[in-house]
Length: 244
Image 1: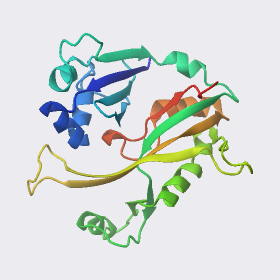
Image 2: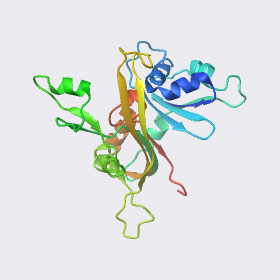
Image 3: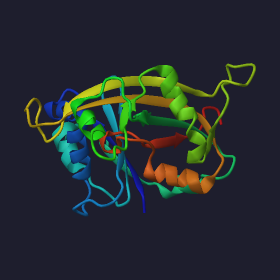
Image 4: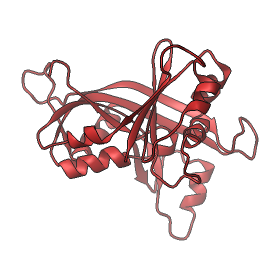
């Protein structure tokens, strides 16, 4: 049975700052909330930053526990609940043909190519292999990132609604609410030469959509979309449309 969790993080705490700076450390903390170790289930997560706190959303197959994150990075012993865990099945049951929702997706829009403009040392190594499969390069412009979404969403079981601000009814109801370039190091180090440097370009999309293929849409919600899922990308969340 899938569960969707919401955990509040206190950005003033040192533990929270360490997690917010490094998606690999956050991923490890998220996996630490799963009792079935080693973790073999699909786990998706996303950070939504607000003015005074950060919201961690996590989708799991089994019921998790977030006590360790609250103790490290939250408001310990606060009056308000710091973590909520909800059964995800009621939302999946509402995924029916023609239903409309608001959505949010933080993604890592990339394209595969064998001829990157400025390949990294690791990419050069991969491309020099006897049978190169190409490397991933990020879409960095707003236009390319929006095109990445609009060209794929039908394969995910959805269609974008048209923007209410467009009298012609041609512009899709989607906007880029955030764009980030994250640089961090793997293997638990910050500057060690043996640590692999990771550069991640993310885009957060907000908009409105309609369900066109319920079965495929449910699989999209459960499995996520795109690359860098371990680093907080790919979790598509739905909400009632404002005024509906």
